[in-house]
Image (cartoon, rainbow, N blue to C red; front, side):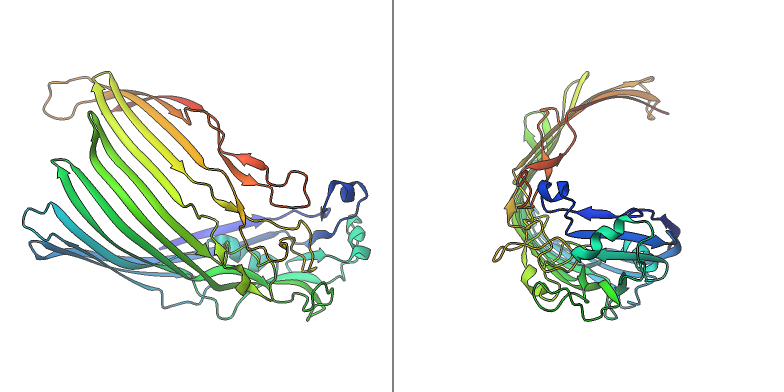
Length: 419
């Protein structure tokens, strides 16, 4: 069990946050959206999680091993009591030499919401902390006044009455073959199906295109947290494990796959909340090609090396108009006919290198003696710029360009004493 006291003091948007479609609109103070908050910014709650896990491995036959597992999870605020997660794995060696092993398995894995959604539910309930999302051009500038009309419709967050914790079903089948004394090759298919995935939806969105009239006019955005999303992943993996080349041992793996989904997470809104079915497209994590290498080598008593190499194809990013075309208070509208995550980022290349040297104080001792280890690490040793975030707004002059990147080359020296 995990009981933790969570708290948040949200003093954002006290003076209002304004959204502009272009630099010209900013200079003219023509915002298309404004957000402000008034009320008690502090909220505290107890987060309670319970998990139970059982597993057993046994041999049905000298050439057949079976693993059975069971897990159950529960958390408060989500009245979902049937989170039973069975798991099974089989390993069968067709011949007595056991040089070839066929593996298969499947399992269910539930996810936890984390404190974020609960904090949103508690503070944006229409009373604790009132949030105003204004799209009316005639009222936007009134937000700049600290004494603006607080009788404006408020934005609230609520939980769908049918919400359940999200889970994935993972299944795989593969074959592994020993090609040398300490080296194996394997090919494996891995499938993942995400069910009841979290998403948010404005259930008070304007019904007609470009309409400012909401079904419940006493509210602006009514964010409903739902578990109606889905995810599909399929990967084919090729793995070489053991002695890769002379002096080097480790694991090299290439994966070819595809990931599709209709949600980007619990804080994600569809471009049109009244038409969430149109969001099925590439998942945020979709990368067609992935190559990873982890290897180490004892070249010399003074030269123990470790290498971590990752080469990945690019991930997608979303392209939007940069405006709130349907006036639902969320500026994630896409051009007509363009699917979610239609943009394509460049690939990723990362190389980390580690050197270490261990000195034993009593090398001849049978028991493990005290030792002192010196190490030097170089992260991103090639100093390659790997971008992670891109401008997807068509109204921005920086459209398609990067705005964030992973750290440049970093060097680290270390010493560790063990006794």
